[in-house]
Length: 393
Image (tube, rainbow, N blue to C red):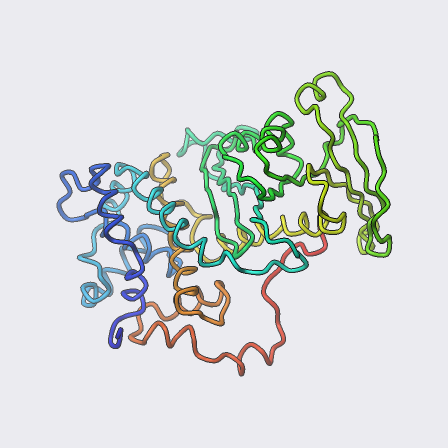
C-alpha cells in the first residue's frame, strides 16, 4: 500500500531503476559526482516537469522551500540551480535518451489495442511530424534555424493507438523533415501518415519495397499521368475520385518507378478538394482519407506536450542540456501514460497529468486519486477529449 506517501514519491516508483542504474554505469554518469547523482538529477528535473516549473531556479527554490519533506519525496537533497545546470551541461544525455526509449518499449504495448475513430483496419498506425522550439541563436549557437534564428526540432513518430511516441529524434532547426525518413526502419504492413514535406520519392520507395504503407499529400510540382480509374466508391461520402497514376518526369520515374494511388476528397465544410497519394491499393478510398485525418493527432500530441510539460522554455542552451531537458520531458509523459494504463484510469492522459500536478505534494493514494468514478464530473459536462484540427487534412 502507498498510504502516507506523497503523490510525487508514488509517481517515481514507476521509474525502472535497475535499467536506469545500468545506463548510468554505461555512460559513467556518476563519475566524480558528490552531492548530485544522476538519479537525483532525474528526480529534480521530473519534479520540474510534473509541477510545470519554468526554470531550474524555480525547481531549486521549490525544493529548498520543502527541504523538510525531500527525503519522503525520494529526493536526497536540494542543490543550487548552478549545480543542476552543470549536471545538465556535462552528463551524457544518452542516459535519459535510452531510458526514454526503454519506457517507450514498455508503454506502447499497453495501448496497442486502442481503437482509432473511423478506422476499421488492425494495422499499426503511425503519424510522422516535427515541432519546432524557438531559442536564442546567441546562447544556442549549435541550434541553427531559418532566417538566422535559433531553433530546435523534435521529430516524432507517433503510434496513433494511444498517442505514444515510437521514436523521437532531436535536431537543429535546419534539419529538413524529409531527412527523418532515412532514420526510420519501415515496419511491414504498418501505415505511415505524413504531410507533403516528407515526400522524398527515394525514401518512400524504400518504404514500399519493405512492405510498409504510406499516405501523404502530393507536392504542387508533381508531374504524373493517370493510368486507371476506380469506381468502387460512394460519392456521398465526399470521395470525388480514385485513380492509379505514374510519375512522368525522368528523375521522379527513376526514384519511384511503380504505380501510385491518388484519392480526391471534397471537404464540404471548407469547400475545397483535398488530394492524397498512397502506395496501398487495398483499403477503401474513404479509409485513405480517414487515415490521413488522424495525422493531425500528432499535432494534438505536440500541443499537449507544450501545455502540460515544460518544453517551450529551455532549461539550458548547450546541445547536451537541451537533449537532456527534452528527453526528461518525454519520460514524464511516458510515466503518466504508464500510470494511467497500469491503474486503468477512466481519465484521459491530460486529466491524469493535471491531477498529479495539483496533488504532487499531497499524501493520498495515487490509485484512488486517478480511478475514482468521474460520472458526476465529466459525463455531466458532455465534453469530449481535445481533438484539434478535426476539419483539416
